[in-house]
Amino acid sequence: MNIKNVDFKKPARDRILRGIDTLTDAVASTLGAEGRTVIIETGGDSPIITKDGVTVAKAIIPLDDPLENIGATLIKQAASKTVDSVGDGTTTSTVLARAIIKNAIAKIDAGSSPVDVKKGIDDMFKSIVDKLNDMSTDVTAENITDVAIISTNNDVELGNLISEAFTKAGDNGLVIMETSENEITYVDYVDGMSLGRGYESSFFITDESKQRAVLTNPYILILDIKVDRIDEILKFIEAASKKNRPLLIVGELEDKIVKVLAQNKVVNNLKICVVKPSMFGERKREMLQDLAIATGGIMVSDETGDNLFNVGLDAMGTATSAIVTSDDTILTLDKEEYNDTINARIASLNTRIENSESEVEKGLLKGRLSNLNGGVSIIKVGASSDVELKEKKDRVDDAIHAVKASMQEGIVAGGGVALFSIGNSLVAANEGGVILLESIKEPFRQILKNAGMNPTPFEKDVTDVNGVNVKTKKIVNMLAEGIIDPVKVTRKALENAVSVAGTIILTDTVISIARDK
Image (cartoon, rainbow, N blue to C red):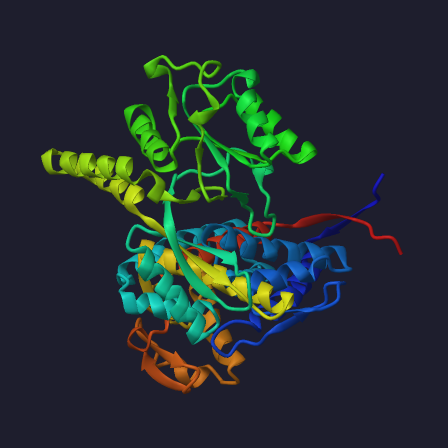
């Protein structure tokens, strides 16, 4: 039985804050164009050198003091949630969370109601998001390059390469990352498509660090039929296993079957992943038929009287690779083999688009057309050492997510300027609002501090577009200079910071496991 410690009120909060400071001081040092690197001992042959905030946060935990460790762990959650949802903005989220917590606790220790403070913060958060959306500007090709360069820690060569990848993929194309076969980093363009849905169980993950399943040269079983017996699909699983190839099942399986397959993946190293179709009814069938045509497979459907026991193994399609995350599946394909059938399908979709009088239907058809006719840019990341490769891949992964986020919700002035200007422009009606408006100014200040600058003289000149270029130490138009942030990344960083801060603000008692002396 674990012996527990119970700590209360200010003494407990003070120790939690020390843990928050320990983690945030390390992570915050990486923020901005002049942010510093952090060296992390791994226990292996070489240490990791990184500017990736979530990597730093994960390396710090556990701390020796149990309450300090709780504080650090909670702040790390803000960074982890941000990287899981948008792949970037982890350091900003960490800096924001600490600022909110410290400012709020100072008010609570002075007698303010924790519940009222939290409510005020939550209400003001909604106003800040509305303001961010109002400030948002659509991205251009030039903006994409700027976002990529900033997200790779101002690596111009790497940023340009990522921008090239998005240009090659086109508006509806896909961009992914793989390890290069040599030291060179380059872009490879292949045919591919997205399924718009992720894995049915996290137990199918093969790459824990990126939380994704990577299947090389998989067979693909495409089902428009509900599977409620494992023996219905057993011959396809056995055939793939005999060939030592993974099997991707795209279809609806009973939960008990998904659990059995997931267990076999974990216990017996079965190379398998299950993805549920992203649509329903006739739209689902048409999407699955598109997939069958692109992969050379057959859609098994009860609409045509198919029975899995009677369907041959040649019903399975193939792909060069499949990368499956929690919310999407990206296939790389060799479409040349099926050019005739794919082109016929494309012609059919174009005809339907021309003849349709429904804008909704046209939009859906155009989406299918882009997916069927699209491609995948693969950024092949190379380096001269494993340590350099890991650090480089982290930066490329951040940049890919940042560019995608900017394309989804637009951009605002970077360098902490957007939030700082909102902090000045909005008016708070209560203490919680005042706390949040002051806290969102902290990323701007931290970026300048990391550049060896005193933020105070520059604060009066900040507007929604004007801020400080820490490279030149001058006030500039941030949008014109290409110093920009994706709205989605900024919004998610703040959202997760507010969420974690709210948990700590309402805490009065902490129960921890006593450490052995």
